[in-house]
Image 1 (cartoon, rainbow, N blue to C red):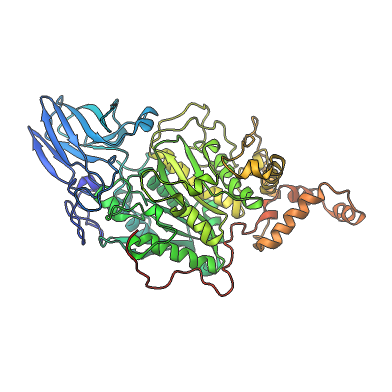
Image 2: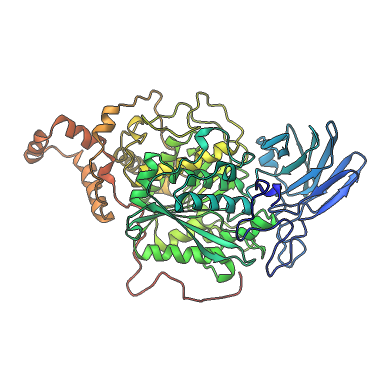
Length: 626
């Protein structure tokens, strides 16, 4: 197994992984995975996720071209941004002047401070940004240039963003399977790739106890690569009776920050953290780590092996859209069983800074629950930008400028909402480069925290693997805050005090602003989430923790409870209510005010199908690709 794919030397190739220089399947191998010699330097991209089409030497400068998705095939797409290649043959002090002359314009991203990444074996084993680069646009293309000086007789790798190849994904899945099916700790030397994952003990997976980890194959891709589905829950319990949290990533192959968010999400929900244990007890967590393995393997930026943007096929997928067809079928089955609670697809964004949600335009209480998940993310991650979140109607129907004839109606979050009525169906986006600022001094829950979540200054940071990983972990905690019982929630330290306070605030705010103003167009301006001074009272948190988890209510019953609670505030107290209140102890009254369990109901339940009508597509349907 070659070092470009991230495998330690001497380890066996995992089942189904691509050997160096090979792509098997019904479609021709990618022309942008090659090797050539120019002078004394050897250029290579013939490895997993590699992309370099050609090299021309002009004096001391090397002019590089990269391949479009499905280059030189009838399916060739416009995308031409991803590159990943190695250079060897240099000695200490040798200089390289590299220019990619046919990149797609990425002016916005590079103006934010984005730079290519590099690592050198053995001198610089971790991925770092090149010190500087220059992007110049002309004649409909961009020219990206940077210099490098060899530190020794290294093999140097350069990429558009930190790569996460299919081989690396499968090696990581193998180690998780070994850890949780044989009840042995994973061998750090195998799965903790020093060049890929963040440094520090805080980021090492500490396996949880009584974990049910089931690794299955959802389907095969058009190239014959496996599309894997992970099922995670508490061992010894009936997972089929639990509500489902569904998370996926890499529908667009070049959006590797989404894969690192997935890495953070997975390492958290499988860990010994008490919040992870609560997630596994209350929910079944379904994960598709890579939706588009062919695109990842071939070094594509946005499409599959047929040049299709799979995130525009969810509205009416066919079996030619491989993973999307099977994922939607699975989600509709869960919706029919009234088990689907959360759908999240992880992406990277080149034009907007920071991390944010793209959600659906809802009204009334559904909108409050949508925004509540975003607010919880802002409490749990300093990189989450509320102002960049969008829950607009326009964002559900906009035509895609890169894919003619396609609209956002075919995206996962819009199509799943349209088919099931799911409240929390969102796309999670994070920038490749940076955010506008970090949220300083976030409230911290006593006894636990998230590594990398506490910043003392608001200055923006240049993102790396650790920041994307933290955002993925924060997503898991935020879902627990909103839909489960989190005894270590930061809500009591926020201005809301409890989940009831958060939802009530959002309902009151939307009512004051008016329906048309709030729910059509851009999202409403929301008050600040975190107060300037935060104090956490451990006594309050202990008071609101019930001895037994409160059973989940139906949505209709809980909606009525919320209406009665908010209405009763405006009504004068009755003698009967006063008598009940008088019998309560001060501790019980305090728990009743703070306890988020008052609103522990499956607010994101998918609506049941209409009578006599199945949500599932006809079995075995096969149409031509759209």
